[in-house]
Length: 130
Image (cartoon, rainbow, N blue to C red):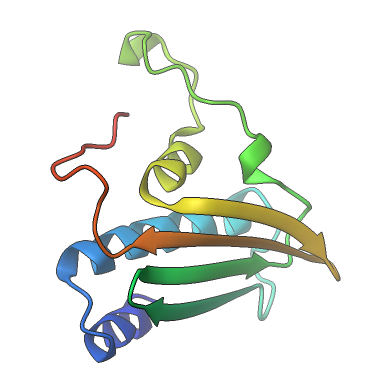
């Protein structure tokens, strides 16, 4: 997946920051589909479509796992001391922080999450609170 993303980014003259963030998001979604969605050992468990345009990158991540709408997942508690926080939820939080215009639908046995990564960050230097 990382090699194909690298190729896509080079072909579309996308910077290393875009590639890094897209790789982070796609790896998180794929890992969740395998670990939590029941896709482990399933052939053709996921599909990724990328499209570059002047405003950024459009992404569709689809998996054949159990129905799960990540947009309905509870926001993680970022205020409690790390040692006392409940495990989980940070990956979806990270996806929400990096990507914009997220939309989920379940169709034909597939979870489909569409989203965009703008070509320019809205706030330069913005971190991703964990």
